[in-house]
Length: 90
Length: 147
Image (cartoon, rainbow over all chains, first blue to last red; front, side):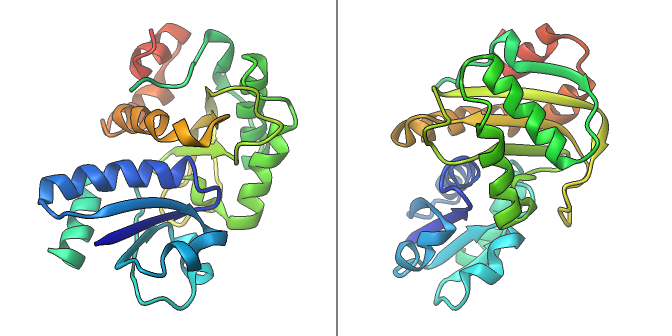
């Protein structure tokens, strides 16, 4: 499974989301590759992804995709990440 | 995994900012003071938010001000600015912001280790409130684990 985290720069916030998503996925025992990317490369990065993790600001810009788009409000709240990833993938 | 450098010169406590632009500029000035970025990095950080919205407010009360690696970044570094009065960035859930974490990344390949260390600090849900309440540089460095 492939998960893409999206932010404006492709570093920083998407990196934090990647790191915390990987921690949560390990606890949930869900094998997945998590890739951080910037919004300008979302079409390419997410072409074969099942899930896109991002902020509410990027939902419109992500546009049409086959992936589940999951909006994360608090990037440091692993409980929120766990709940939303488990609901989508568990 | 270790945090990017957060020297005393990159920490500003109890600052006054009129709006999110001046708050982000303070975080950039702190990065410039520590030698992590050129003063022009402020414009890059502000442009990210103008282009993409207030997504940098990644947790309640905290903005991660950052831009891409580029010529205005001199070396990896962090800065921390706490505000006397919080400012609004226009985020639907996480406003208002009282702690701005400035991030300069010189080498994109190495950035994941740096942000993993940032996540380690802030996955503790009390870290943002503790930083906002900190009154000394020592206290900030202790919360960040850089003391």
